[in-house]
Amino acid sequence: MDPATGDPLCTVSECGPDQVEQAVRAARRAFDHGPWPRTPAVRRAGVLFALAERLEAWADHLARVETLNQGKPLRESRADLEEVVACLRYYAGMAPRRLARTAPRPGAPLASVLREPVGVCALITAWNYPLLLAVWKLAPALAAGNTCVLKPSELTPLTSLLLAEALQDLDLPPGVVNVVIGDGPGAGRALAASPRVDKVSFTGGAAAGRQVALAALGNLKRVALELGGKSPVVVFSDQDLETAVDLALYAVYCNAGQVCSAGSRFIVQADLHDAFVRRLAERARRIVVGPGLDPATEMGPLVGARQRSRVLDAVRAGVREGARLETGGAPLGGGRLARGFYLEPTLFSNCRPAMRVVQEEIFGPVAVVQKFTTEEEALDLANGTPYGLAGAVFSRDLARGVRVARALRAGVAWVNGYHTTGPELPWGGCKQSGWGRELGTFGLDACTEIKQLNLTLEPAPIRWFKP
Ligand code: TXE
Image 1 (cartoon, rainbow, N blue to C red):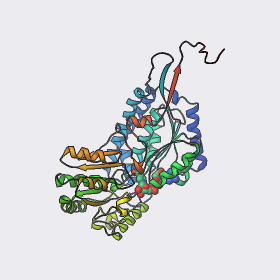
Image 2: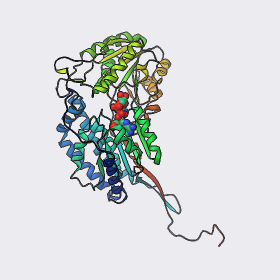
Image 3: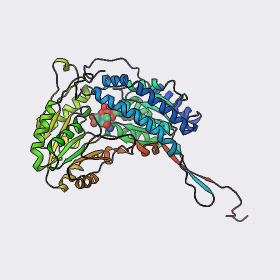
Image 4: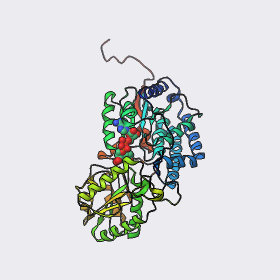
């Protein structure tokens, strides 16, 4: 479906349990008996380099399909495509070196530490960055020699299907990459529960993440979870107002707020607070909301009706609990926006820590502002939710910026910036934002098992027991 109009784009067949099982068996066979895990890492890297080239040549088309299916403005889909290509090249270049580490000990036996692939990996992705999340998971898994079953979100399967098409005539043995289409309770659950799957890597909401972890317990498969957050941005009054507001808009309204790491909670020092709120509301009102394919669009629709009604529900809770609605809070309709799932950029001030809008991930274009006086108070507020994915500090005093960023309980922290990251940097959160890290060397390690291999060069009886 096109979230800009609500119109269907095409029909995609859903995999039933038998087809999910078939995909898992194909991946199992490819892992247990196929050449892929035993292929030299540099040859596997060759496939990833070739895929990167193919996707780069196809980038315009893929970006348009992503925008059509997901709703985000074209400029964001294009930026995603750059990251997709960079991620593939990064793992193609890095994996062969990292996988070949050995740690010989002095004397005999000669010991090595080997990194081996985990096995069959189920990769379950969310709808906010469909292609990017697929590649974040696939690239390290493949580089390490695993075989995969990818299940994109039922809302945004199109670019994952095109990815499968791009893989088709590359030098990849059968069964190494399988794509199944289906929803969470169906295909997603079956993958997480399958005894033939060795690892599940999941990006999605906390509720589904818990179910994945529970389902995975059956065969104690490895579990990686990226579950979003309620990331704080601590704004000190020594920061220039225009810079702080400009960065804040980017932190929260990018991809209409449907970003796991969205900076959605501004914790602002008292003497800057009123000016910050006023200016942020003014700038939020000026954001051009429209269909993602229109080059003038700065913010697209939400992904669908259900997501928009969830966000509106959170907005109503905020109003009920006494937060002050500074701007937004309503669906945008009329004219060309009438049929899409648009929502005004929304800002609440006067927020207390216990409010739902402060504690819960909203996953829409909704920012909340809290006020602080001392640094200690700012940190209590910043760390005062169950989440710990990301956070930021805006201050001209870099020593303070780094001090506060280090005290944030989060997997990712920025000082005077937001959203910048890359495939070489670890991604993931603490507390209830998930388990483990993706990307970087950490993401590759998470796709491997470690084996200690001992080789006795000149075996002879050791006579531990009397002969
Ligand atoms: O995602 P779901 P939903 C958060 C965000 C959002 C909320 C719900 O707050 O409002 O989650 O979004 C698959 N076993 N995030 O319901 O259900 C599903 O098919 C296995 C944050 O749209 O989490 C899809 O492929 N799989 C997040 C994927 O999980 C299951 C991004 C995500 O769907 C499953 C998206 C199950 N039991 C939403 N149930 C982030 N980390 O950024 C669902 N799925």
